[in-house]
Length: 190
Image (cartoon, rainbow, N blue to C red; front, side, top):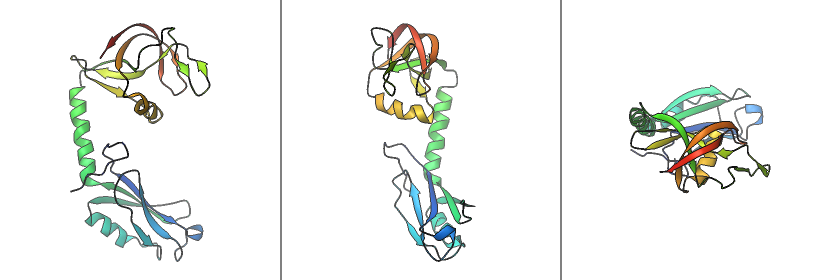
């Protein structure tokens, strides 16, 4: 069974089938299109009726769990979860939660701490109140997992290739992307 992945290689089980090209959601014009952020193959069906049972049956036969809802025009929208891919996601989350059950909360930074002790907010070209970091959990053997919001996930993927440092200090603010900003007392390279 296929496992579907997003553009950076992570398992991604979600997709949506929506109506496109129909006038105010009315059947007869337009089509249903399968849209996702994963590498599942694109699919398309004519929008001839609000009855989507044939689409749901096709998707379920291919290993998807489907839920039918309505869009803002009352046209059918089908939310889909790929069962095998979701099982991989659930198993990885369970293993990670077990590993980090007794983890210590702290902060991590990718890239060395600026010598002047202040990060730059590149969006506004201003100085932060301290050093930008991410919240993280650390195991006794210094393995870690970064705790990110959807906004911080983008930043995280842009810096993940830099050297990692566990950062200690006092939280003095919140950065432009919602990250903790610290007055750093010391760091430990991971």
